Image (cartoon, rainbow, N blue to C red):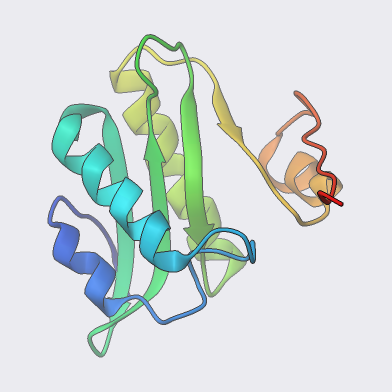
Length: 133
C-alpha cells in the first residue's frame, strides 16, 4: 500500500463509515462537508493523504493551514500501522516546511502521552466540555 497526496474530494466516498468522527455530537457528513469546503476554498493550504487498498481508504490524513495562522491543523488522521502513520507525519512535515509553517497542532481524545512519545507533540491547550442541563 502506498500513501498518495489527494486533491479530489471523491476520496471521501471510499472511507469506511465510522473513521472520520469519534465525537457523537459531530456527524461524519458534517466532517466531510467541512473538508470539501476547505479543499475548494484553499487547495494550496490543504494536505490530504490517503492509502488505498482494494478501493477502500485504509490510511488517511486531512490537515490544513487555518487562514492567517502560523500552524497546520490535523483535522482527521487514521492509519493501519505505526509505520504508515510515521510516514504520513513525515509527508506532513515536508508540506509544512514548504509553506514556511513551523508547528503542527491536533486535538485527540486518546492518550496524549502516546503522541508525545511517538511524534514529539507537546501539550498546547486543554479542551473541556460540559453537558447542558
